[in-house]
Length: 87
Image (cartoon, rainbow, N blue to C red; front, side, top):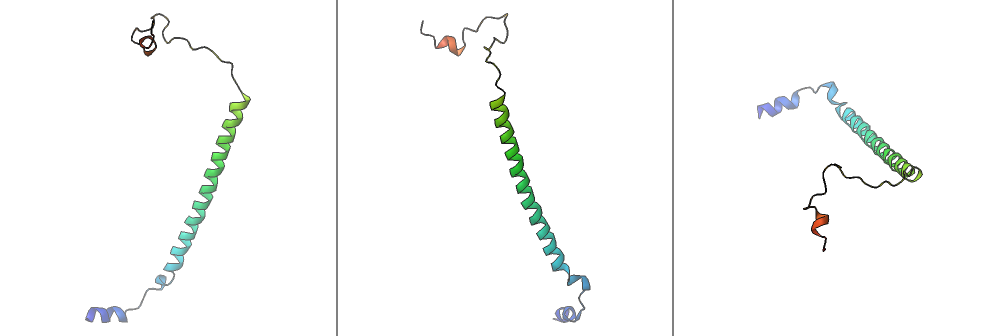
């Protein structure tokens, strides 16, 4: 019980009075940063999707037939396209 009486009579540091204000100011700053980060991510997504759409529709390369990977080796007899052939 003497410890509690000693603690009750002890003088509190002056910085303890402003501790709550510092913590709340820090939390408010983090909330502002989070809100601005959400706006920046939405803007980046909009620019990325918009740019992809514009480039995808504006620049259309001509269609080219696919060539075999190695022209020196014939197609494998175990390829799925030959296994499904009914001839």
